[in-house]
Image (cartoon, rainbow, N blue to C red; front, side, top):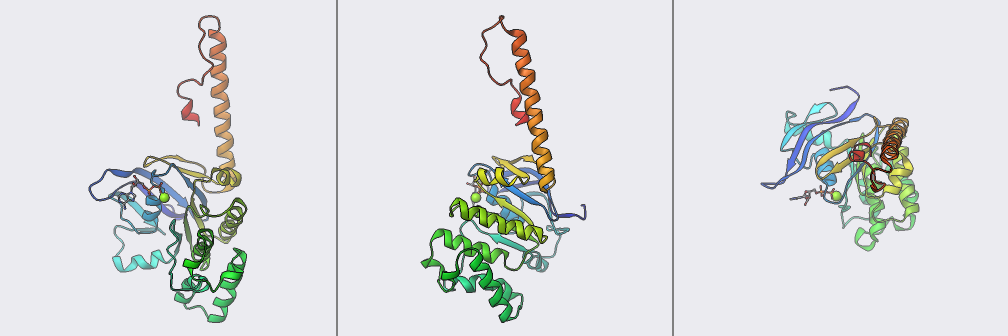
Length: 275
Ligand SMILES: Nc1ncnc2c1ncn2[C@@H]1O[C@H](COP(=O)(O)OP(=O)(O)O)[C@@H](O)[C@H]1O
Ligand SMILES: [Mg+2]
């Protein structure tokens, strides 16, 4: 494994119980400091892939390494230390209901033994940044979905994890807040955190231009770029030019056939390989 990889999957398969494989032959790696979007239809396996990454599930087959350690051969007592380097934004938030928003976000810092004065400063600043200044003392059940989502994001990023995994982190907020939260992730990424964001929001994906991991019914269909923006742009441009070329060739073929048939002006078979 290359030293620059935070995570690596090799031919990973996952099934729940005796059910069918919901992930098949998944192979990819996350370079240290990279930022990826994870996209795919509902049920494609995005949450399952993230769960494998944060060690909530074991693969049915294949190899997963995290921070350079093969998780199948890592002694069980060492797994929590790996897990603590990963910040997770859960799709269903998983906040502690009996604690205030402030205390939920403070938890990772307190667990890490940070001085209370520093905890106070960091948590206050971050909650203000995500627009929850007036809700620090509120308990999660009294907050809206979007507010709980922001508490969950603040808790995931507060301790500057090495790897941040966010499962549909902007599903409950408006477009403006979604962009603001993505900027928070970008800031964290600049500070060195490797990031994977599972999302349905293609406007965000297209707007920000990071490389894409695309799941199609449990199979990883596309791995684009190496995890930085310029690589992603290059990939996008090469994809667009391949697409243009294929269209131009198809047009030329149609021109040649003109008069022989009254064929529809459709894309040629195989164009999907370029999309
Ligand atoms: N705990 C579970 N038990 C059985 N099947 C599951 C479980 N969680 C997810 N699945 C199935 O795995 C597939 C992928 O689900 P999921 O990873 O949640 O996809 P996504 O996050 O892309 O919507 C789906 O067919 C789903 O029904
Ligand atoms: Mg999901």
